[in-house]
Image 1 (cartoon, rainbow, N blue to C red):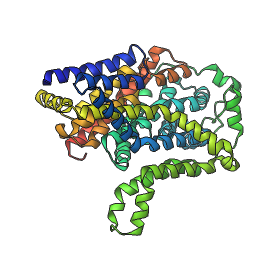
Image 2 (cartoon, rainbow, N blue to C red):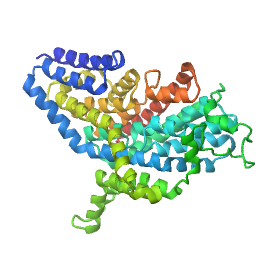
Image 3 (spheres, helix red, strand yellow):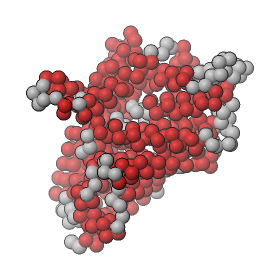
Image 4 (cartoon, one colour):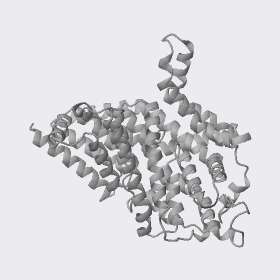
Length: 465
């Protein structure tokens, strides 16, 4: 089979993937399965071997990442329903006053965005942000996108987000290294995107349903800080404001304890002798699946006396499982795609083509992830699919798995527009038009991705990653 045919089949498969999702709205899981099986058949593997590779790739990938995705989604659901995310937002707002309040929103979004996907962060906190906009006379065209962008960048680059978890599994990247370097790359991107959003002059009022209950209140409390209102006009939000929120330290422990354990396992355990009991305990606790489960256990006290109820111990876990279903399926089929590519001559052919063109290898995963995200509207699909495509190419391109992971995570941020659920959630709830959403969310997401990639490129150039 000629290299030209192999490359044509691979290119056609990627084009078909994008077309089916973006144009014909076929579900990403079904699309990936169609593409994977078709690619195996057209490359001459035959039906039996193609199915064998698909099931092997699917099973091996889920074996390594399945429980991680489940526990990550359960942890996010626990932080959402316990009020911990609102408590973190309240604390962030208390640190900033006056015109610095947007940075409080960015900080809260960044922290809460570690375990929660960006769409959920917006749905949960938009009543708070709308109340702040109303009381401070700030534009929702600034504050709404700032609320979204922090969580969006973290979801693209830092575990335990489903996209980063899938990408680290597919690429074989140590989770501690992925978390550390993901933070190094993500935070500057969030800062640059926030700085851009603060330059927007167009004023957009918050939606009335989030602010009608504030009519007649003063714009602040005399301290220069806007009053934190956890309520909207709906009864659910009002009930949230009446319920006592958990303490800040208890709200932060389930987020950062797993990260500390994982990073200790990655960077500290090697300092101990092989038979050292302390090192053995740290290695066990720092296993990602154990660390995330410990995070879930650490979130139980957030529910107070309700921690031992069926709603907390059973129903909440089931809600997390439902949330994990889509990322799990995508991850498994993405692993099957990587297996098909690895078992053919596609990887070698593409690597040789890239070298012949004289492209820097680090640019390739960035462009692949950016193209998938921009066309399909999903950063999770962007980082995961790009990782699946690039993993078999890593050896031929001579590039580390960590560098590929970070390039995929930055590329997968570019760019949010009208084909994205997160774009519509943020635009609609922030009372913006589509054009205003593109000027704010679209440009900010592109800036965060480009900024992050510039850092990745520099780290790669200096041989750090």
